[in-house]
Image (cartoon, rainbow, N blue to C red; front, side, top):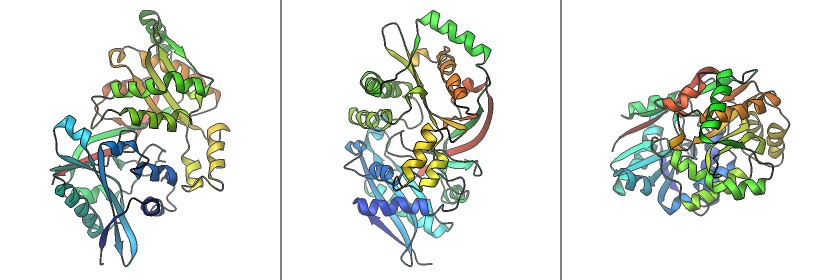
Length: 377
């Protein structure tokens, strides 16, 4: 087949075609969860996404006989490179048909662009920040994906390994049975933690108050808690404002648990959300005309038995001291109230024992694994 790879513009019409290719490739796949097209375009748009204050990107699409057969984003995260001392590019938003000429041509275009900008290595799939989806699925292809994760066909990793890419890091995911009662050990640990460190759980019923009081502190805490994780880069002030506006205003407040100390300082938090996977499949990437209704039903009318653990963070000096147990003494009754049977952990680094140890009191099934690949260029 004749393959042509083109750099596309960052006009919203071209970005929409770039996004839609990824959705169309998985049409009829029961495990794939499409993003909202408008949200994905905003992420890729240099005008909308504040990560472009310190990132450069080029987007490529592959065509055969005028038909799109692949896509890839090539990203240079200058702030990450300044921190690491590397000259490394990222790849992300990558999809392609099962043809090695196509995948090879896509990666060649991306790598050539990176090399022309002085890069010496490549890693991915990664996005512009850790709030973007990352990691190529290598196990769990028959499991329903989540709104926070990438789904891809099994042949993707085979193509990358044939091109000389090697494992840089793995993330694992767990399906957790929601217990009928709070584990006794959680209750004991939670009480000790409250007494020893003067901590308390605080909930919010006013979205305006939540935005004002913990909007920025929440993401500032993410900067501290995740600082040493793989390829993490601190969120800038503009990024924090951007994510506060996107996420805090959309959360169900009863699924947001915060922990504060006696000085009213945010020590930790847990954010969950009813699974929107099936709703997003029905929406097919669109809010209108009926996509919003599917999402609202899943969010507020209990049309799913799965809840997603989107984000859990604890201040570094309080990690491994039982704060997570305190979080779950609040979240578990909330899950029970709405009849959720399972919780999705979402990705956590396979070597992060601090995170994985918190699942020991749950009925946990490690059902997915995803990988970051890299190589010299």
